[in-house]
Amino acid sequence: MSAHKAPAHAPAPAESRKISVLLKVYGVYCLVTAAAVLALIALIAVPLIQYGADLYRERHDVTLTMTLAAAQLVVMLVASVGYVAFGVLVLKDRRRHVAQIAYALLAVGIVNLVLEIMLNGFGDNLIYDGVRLVVLLVISATIDPTLVSERQLQRKLRDMETEEAA
Image (cartoon, rainbow, N blue to C red; front, side, top):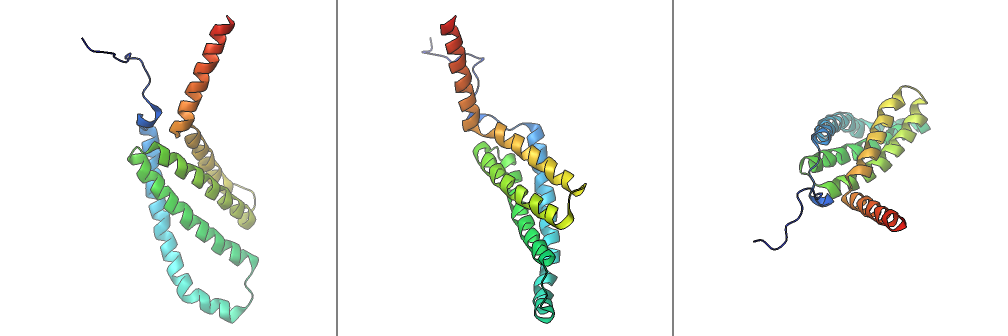
């Protein structure tokens, strides 16, 4: 007969496991919202670039608020590009790259959260960014194939130690 067959209940390698449908729906959501934000940023940035330089030259009183708003616009641009990449990679089942993008988006999200606090203070405006950071944290902790396989290995070692102790 055949040489050696793997048991039917053996878990699939972490790298080859498919991404869940719920995460794919979230990926589509990220892709669509990020594309919309990119379009809005383009609508804001084009006139700002055309007329903003004249405003800066004429007024000479660039405030901290204006500088922070410009910085937040740049951070939103970076985050939107990252979320588009995140959505595309989720749809392509690229677990490793999804985890790497999620790690990067966590950092960008924290910077955006700090800028949001500096510009608008604490309030309801932080709920959306906070929820998005928590979702990214959960995704980054569960999707990375090396972390999943590392946890499985630690579980097996713990089970072996328990068996030896018994």
